[in-house]
Image (tube, rainbow, N blue to C red; front, side, top):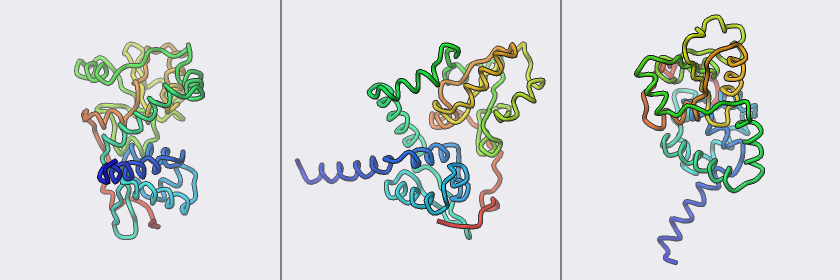
Amino acid sequence: MSSAKRAVFARLAEIAQGLAHPHRIELLEHLAQGTRTVEELAALTELTFANTSRHLKVLRQARLVIAQRRERNVFYNLSGEAEVVGLLGAIAIVGERNDAEIRHIVSDYFHSPDTLDAVTREELLSKLKDGTVIVLDVRPEDEFLLGHVPGARNMPIGQLSERLAELPKDREIVAYCRGPYCVFSFEAEAMLRREGFSVHRLEDGFPQWKAAGLPIESNRADESNRAGTRTA
């Protein structure tokens, strides 16, 4: 084997090693929603600040995330959003195909007989253009503000049962959340179906929509004014 090929394989192995921990994959999922500080990521993953920083260091070394320092804070983003989201999707496809335990979990929790066929991104885009659908973003409000499908209504899953009166029953609803393994959209679909709504889920989530280059809206304020007091 040539030295050049081995050098490339060595770098690819470092990237793969960067993904070799569930906390790091979870951090990438959160960063796929938008820019975050270390403190925000620590709170979202329920990890310590120090542990979060260690995982982010590995992800930086693997060139999967980038960091920008602004005054006392460090803000993290995916390094090549479409590529990293695509990489996570490819791993999921291989896992569901080749790992029996993953197939069992996905079948039990994400593709039960009670769930309907999901709407594809292309189908949702067409419905948006026709004005025939209400899009429901059931992620937390701060993630919605970082970016969302155009015209989407934000009803975090914890508030949905109290806000059903805000949704018309004579329109189709498509709910989405963080990605294909985010349970929020499944819970929203089940709840709305029980209440007599016509509802489907988006096939994956906002990161995949954004990574595909489809239009998004954002209500994000200047990140330099966002809260945060520590740096990694």
